[in-house]
Length: 142
Image 1 (spheres, rainbow, N blue to C red):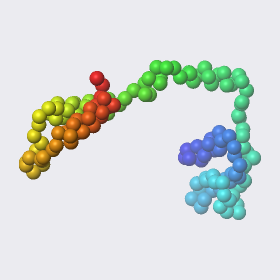
Image 2 (cartoon, helix red, strand yellow; image 1 turned 45 degrees about the vertical axis):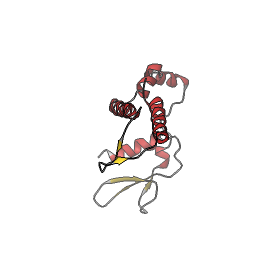
Image 3 (cartoon, rainbow, N blue to C red; image 1 turned 60 degrees about the vertical axis):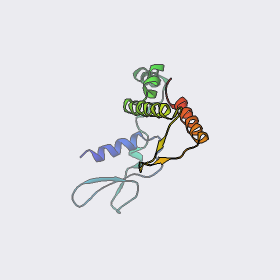
Image 4 (cartoon, one colour; image 1 turned 135 degrees about the horizontal axis):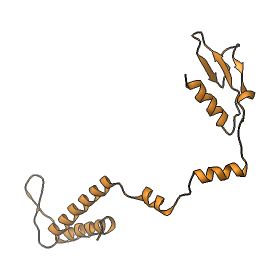
């Protein structure tokens, strides 16, 4: 019931209607609107729906501006605020990274997933620690 009305409103509100608009009734009595002529009996209603009731005056523009308030800095803060769930996940990752940082600082024995000792040179450990420190400084709050 509302589809034809919505279609008409969309056509009326459109800024540039370059296609023809046809209205036709199918065998079940339903009214259809289309931009392609589906049947010879389809009525061309392009002139009836082209750019009607459009006011571009400055007075109308002022009315719209009064209704739609301008964006404020607080709006930007709201839209740019981090997602609480994402923030919680980030906090958890930072906590885990700091725990790992504490574990691999100084003398440490690395154990693999199979439970056996993994040989890691001091240079490799220092490299892992440096990478971890970089990740923490870039992604975690002090």
